[in-house]
Image 1: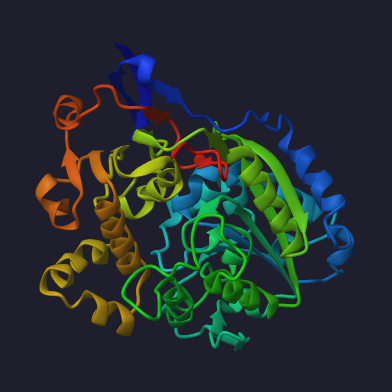
Image 2: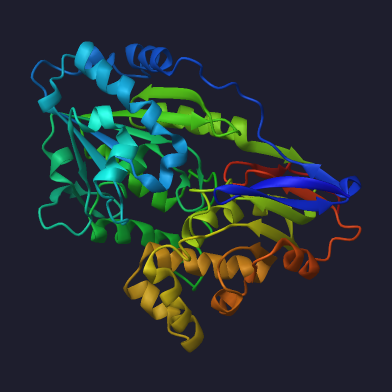
Length: 428
């Protein structure tokens, strides 16, 4: 038996396995950027299908920089924001009092001053205005309606800016196909009703299940993605910066320019780095979310299930290492258990769609497809109605698992790695 080490919360756990049955899946090696300021400047000087940023921004322009919130701090935008602010000041002649940094919280609650300082660094916080987006604010501005019928209302700091720059990380996303890019606008800085109308496309209109048109890596004919792109297209002053992390969660590539074209290049890079070909689906997958903050809650951490399930046989066992120190995440996540038990979940979710409600539904669907065992701080009785099985010690977890003679894929960072079987390659 060999111990395999996985990130868990702010530490690690070891799980002993028979290495004869184990295949470790890592993302494809991509070196980290050594000089972030230089790589960023190169991307901004020669962006994709747009003029250089210094030519695009005009003298006197008021600029809003949209950044991600703490739930995506794994992208370490704090290493990119200081050189970006310097570039805007030194190369684009944007005065500090003409620059606003807007945190794209989506439906999340905005953080306090200390959290904002963590996101942008003390030096930047003390230099420019940094504000939170509130999806329930009364002063959100309508900028139009998408062909999918979504009325798009966004934060006034972006709606009234001369130029808007979005900074985000691109990764796989179970609803939108890929994260980042246009998601900085919708859901990032949009109103609650705008977000809910868009995200309701995640449900199959014909029956109560996830829409088969959405999914990890799916962009074509994905109504949720199409609507997001249309919402971003309502802005004619948008510049996109997309960060791509390597499998070790280090910044590896930067794409900048046109709000769709540059982001699609980042999507291609994400597939190239994270998708790992396997000869067949495994009996068992053991995956870590990648530690905190990736495993801060079920709402955030179960994205790992979305990534790795493509490498697992239906009926197979998924061992998920997810501390979930914040429990389900949004208070509403576990509230759906009552609707699940009394049979009113479909009616409530269709009439009052929420993202935590959909993620709850998705996790229940996944628990029906696989035997999901979790090492987690979440109590077993809390998630039992969902079909998930939670254990608080490695010994209890392994006692519940049946691993003898099973083909096992070990995925140390399930927040990035996406296994896939090449079409026609899997043995029948």
